[in-house]
Length: 334
Image (cartoon, rainbow, N blue to C red; front, side):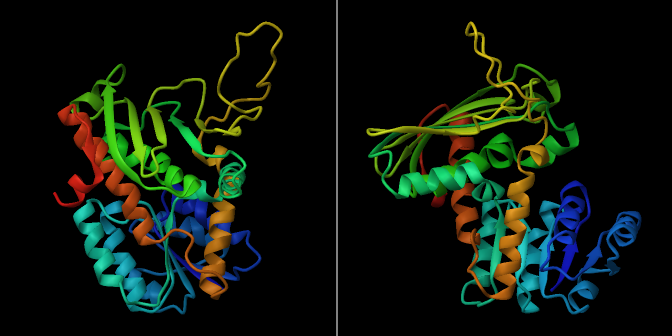
């Protein structure tokens, strides 16, 4: 099949490399406002260069990968749908929830599939955790812990446009909690602080946060995030049930040092970047998209799914700023 890629920044170039290596993909068509980025992709992957999204969609692509800036997501998703081309779009659907809801309204009733990029759904550990929960291996869940710790803060310009740590970082934890447990969040309580980069505080954001989520079956989920974890990129999940407990992310590249006498785990070089931690997941995610394009599977992460994670982020943001519990029903009607 022939896949178009809009946006060739860090993640777009990474997706281009991944798609180039998939057996199902015969050729790529690329477009980026920066001509040099498109030229580099063309030279490396033998891709055709289009000078606009319109030209790319007119180039006979079977699927569209949107990796452009967040502000461009709504228009590019809708352009793909209007052209009848299946769309993969990196999260979020839009810069604000209001814009995301408008996208959802615009595509409802369309039979053109849309897949939103939440790559943890394709990580082998998280897939196994979901299967264990669905099989009842843990019995009734009582506690979930989800962690995302970045090795260093992103640049100031990124922070200023990110919408805040809950919308940018924690949203991955929120999505995977929903997906693994099969339950919805009903209420949140979030706290946060600034212990590092001054520009994060100046942007009105926190660099380290904690959130307690109550799920609709009474399970408690605890989410921990930070922009400062020099040992490496730490993504983990624990699930504790009445019958058993399991963990995702406890491998030899775990960025955590044990001080127990005689313990040598973890013994490997710590994960230091999200592309390192989730290389296989990204490949599985885009392989899934080629199956969506081929019509052999439905979207594994819909616009509706992405918006559900977004509402949790909205509730946590409000909770942090107002120092109180916030229900999801409250932010949905705000």
